[in-house]
Image (cartoon, rainbow, N blue to C red; front, side):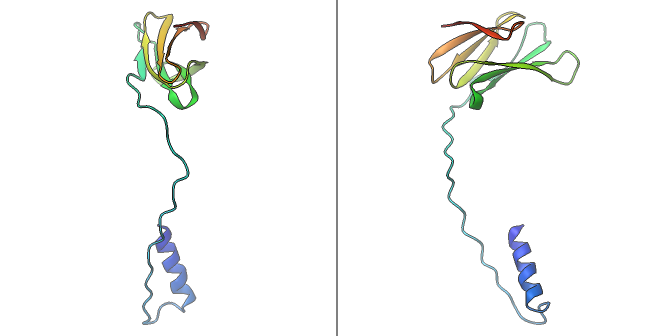
Length: 121
């Protein structure tokens, strides 16, 4: 898209291109300065047994995101800080979830009604 804009500006600068040919070479790709070190998720989404709460591992922010899905569209309830690199979440009951954290090599037991980590294994 940017190449087309450059070509159009060059064409306009040359007086509309009345018979002259303009060649535009592609710009070299800029090197990426960001390296993504996140691990792949194993089971990043889970529903509570009653189906009213969606649990999502937010690996980049080391959090468990909690959504109410009882009304159809997901509504954010809150988030809980867990260990580094949460990769998997399982709802044990409607009130408790276990989150496996890769880098911190731990399991966070989350109390869903209070949105707090009850224990770290």
